[in-house]
Image 1 (cartoon, rainbow, N blue to C red):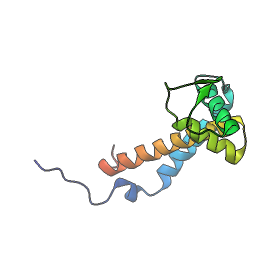
Image 2: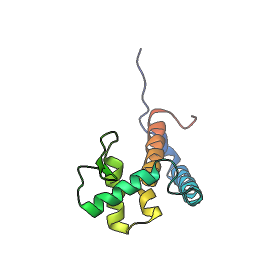
Image 3: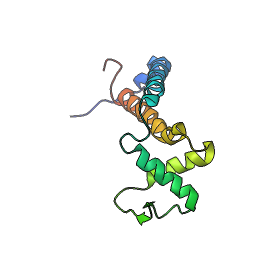
Image 4: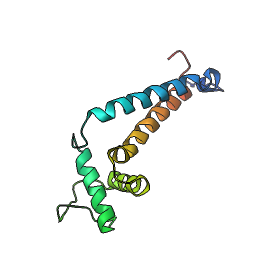
Length: 122
């Protein structure tokens, strides 16, 4: 059994319109939903605080929580938030920017994979 792959992706036949519309919808959703929640909701405050301590201490390798070293979480998100803080200053939107960009990137990746492997009828 052979699988026939299309020569062109459905994204090339549809044009950029649907993707742009999807990105606008996701961006609008993220912008409107974000101010309704406190930065302290869920784990956002935890990671934002660790990112603040990274910048204050200048130690990008060992992450702590109120003076104790923490080894039970990954370090990537704290680095991205600390980088965002260093570029845009410390604010709620700067703390949320890395996850918002990752969300938009996930939508684009899902769109591209869907149009690459399935036709425009899916």
